[in-house]
Image: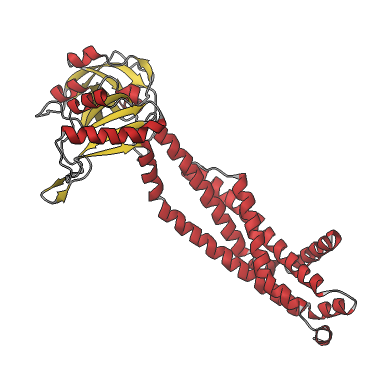
Length: 411
């Protein structure tokens, strides 16, 4: 049997070599389909890994609570659409939710920052002293806030790397310098380690952090002290996050005096939720790409079936001679099936090569992260070979059922 398979494979390769253009056109659909699958999966896995890396920059087991998502006069406001969270809410959560490791709060505005003859429009965050610890955001140089800075509303600031690059000359030391935020002088006490883009595509390093009390009293012009833009908390363990979310919801509903039939006037998000939202947004595109790949593979399979039917017509007399000298129908059947499998296998290999070229081109030109999986490559090649087996079954069966006498008389 092994010798028969080897001989059939050699015959198939010689047939393809004689009709290389026709064979190439027949497997073009396989090549495009396999190449599309390889490129799609590689880009998708790279994007997923990048997304997980970006989500990890938020911190570990972090929970966000945003004001809003309430119904006012029949209209449901969006996230952050109303001022419903306070510092007192955060302090109460710290006391009453034992699963939480720490709780902090933040508020932000876009403000103009000036250093000498340079200026920059930047997001300024007023934060609690433990904000950087919850976010797991270390300092590259200098020091961070302490409770005394919040108590006295000190004008001190931490800078992100992007802000440093836009406000200071190369090689200039930011720590200890004086910058002006909304024309208020602030002393830079630290520079943060770069975190890169967030899962939403926002440059996290394009930010300045000041004590929360300083922000609301000297920068943001708050009418009511204690209102926050978000509360963030961290759980001790990953398995505690879901339980913590439910406890946070109960505490806040009680503090906000919400009745059982009233909707939450706040929104709770976790890192898992953020990841799911991002993955769902790319689901439709993934389905469309899979559809394109499936259609290409279907076209390739039909092309293989077509070329085998043409091959049967050209080799009818040869089939008759082989049957006359003792070849069994099963031999004819398997020979054509092997030809179909080899043809689709070659198309699969060429498709993998095309997919790798596309992936490398995307990485170089667009800078997108990509991951080529050996497991996916193996599965795709095996699938392309199975397409040849499926679409080659009808032509092979037709060849095996030829009448030897009619085949010998065929001209």
